[in-house]
Image 1 (tube, rainbow, N blue to C red):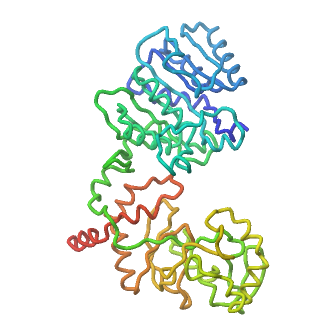
Image 2 (image 1 turned 60 degrees about the horizontal axis):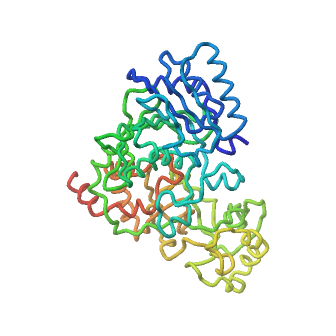
Image 3 (image 1 turned 180 degrees about the horizontal axis):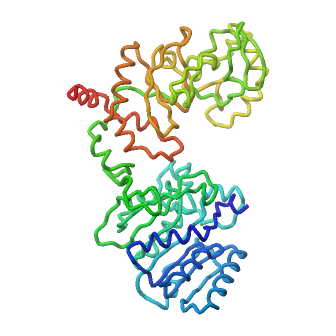
Length: 481
């Protein structure tokens, strides 16, 4: 259950690496605070430093971990340890960091630890009571406060609490967290004009240390700096001295690579082309199929059937686009020419298709998205005149490395894409090739690299593509050649 709650206890070996990394310039801290200390591995590591802190304070909510942490401290204290250690059993969310941390020492403060890697909605679904109170912490407006924008990581909540309540202490805060959390905190600090500096993101191997398939890092910042900077140096690991890239705020928004963005920002604007997303149907088992010959098809359920060929189109997905792969056998059923079109006429003009879909009606009734409510039977989305263009320029929304592909008809039929892909319709193969060449130019790919984070669930978005000024890109490439 611990991992389900986002609880990853930090192995002692990783604790040691982190402490060595933070001490790389010979800096020591007189005071250390850990907001969620778990079984006490960070406290144990701190106490065994050659120059341990004078005072450590920590909080832990879980009673079992709380006892383990106290036992660790007791064992080390028996070996003559002069550090004052106070561990309190409490929820970090309810704890007043300004008034409930009664320090006996003064001087430099380090905040260190590994808060839970889970969102508030996930904890709520698991009926955990270790949750913050329901409030609009980021000051979101309108619909954003009611939707996924208000669902953020518990670690993010803890970061914000630390920044707000410990600002007067001018601490260095260094926490293990998802890289997405680190980025959100940089943006939050900028948006709220918080005085931070010396931000760094040092990547860690989450699979090795925690068996977690997520991009994670040691995120460190100095709070209360006179000279404010919202940039963060990115290092490939805890031990590297070489800066891999620098992320930061330009024009009020966070960019993934400041230098790459400065070199390509002149193409940012409004795209005169309209980017489209592929077909959305949420019924893969029924709607996607393989052509097995003799006008017969086989779906994901193993059903073999016949339908009218006019309603089956070639289908490519993100992986196909990424690898430049054409799969002439895979198809998708297209029930409408435009969103909301009446499908009842299929009973007359395409009876085989209607019977097939009706026999699998349960799969459509189970679709959870609200977009299908009140719509005709077997409705799809992401469909319009543009979908039937014979030529397209398309890109995967899911892959880290970007490449725009030209799509031509397969067996004289326009290629459809699934909703993980984006495309622009083209009037001819020549136009498609020209647009693809512009988009695949080094300056355009640098721009996309600068604006995308590779660990994002969907690195490429329609919003990003729609801000590529194709005319500026054309002028630059024309002058260059």
